Length: 260
Ligand SMILES: NC(=O)c1ccc[n+]([C@@H]2O[C@H](COP(=O)([O-])OP(=O)(O)OC[C@H]3O[C@@H](n4cnc5c(N)ncnc54)[C@H](OP(=O)(O)O)[C@@H]3O)[C@@H](O)[C@H]2O)c1
Image (cartoon, rainbow, N blue to C red; front, side, top):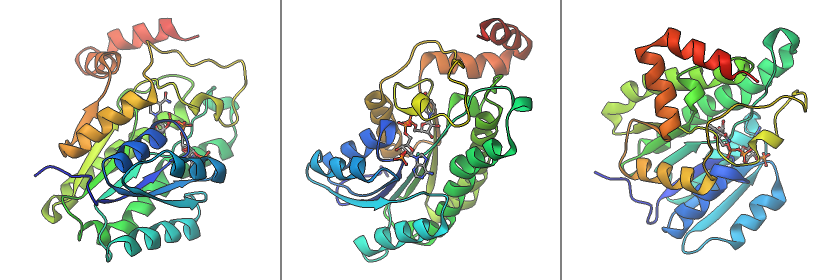
């Protein structure tokens, strides 16, 4: 059975910009009720103006705070008698620069936002997702959750953690009828690179092409509707991931040459 947005109850984190914002708009246009979460209140408020049939239920706050996650769960559960049909763990941050030069706080913060917060939010929503219709937990990872690169050690670690945890969770929740969909975008033209933490402004991110967030959101919603297990979105992303599986030393040599 396919996942259907009409009258669905969805939670989307990182709803104020980029992929998450586009996904909220698409879900609402297709009739879903979306609990939209992010810290920037004015951005979430403006989201309400740009949606169609569905509704936006705004939650302003930091997902690493337990009290904020509690508000998210309450808002979602109140929408349709405790049933929740979709959770998109999308909020994420990055950092660029050598691990040895960085602080312990950089590692902690990236892991808190990109891994621990989505894991705990998911734990809290599972009882509600069990009661939902064809429920899906969609984790927005990265191609860097399949193949790590230099100078993004904290980010790669967080996305590898999200990947491994998603695979375990998928196996655990299969009998409950909950699908876990792992989406791995490549470089996306969002606010992401303006929000890097503890990163020297000289640092650059090497990439082969980039996608607009609208395209990533559209492909993500298609994967959710089809209840896919895992999707690597771009051709360059597939080349990186499958090339690494087939010939890791060759990929190491290619990536070493591309280091800025
Ligand atoms: N951009 C890329 O090249 C790329 C590539 C592969 C994967 N991804 C992944 O795609 C996801 C979305 O990124 P994006 O490209 O759309 O970047 P973005 O435009 O920077 O969006 C990130 C979102 O996360 C929210 N967020 C960050 N920290 C938060 C926190 N502690 N609590 C609540 N919300 C928080 C931000 O909102 P506030 O600041 O308002 O809180 C924002 O809405 C991330 O998981 C990222 O790792 C991105």
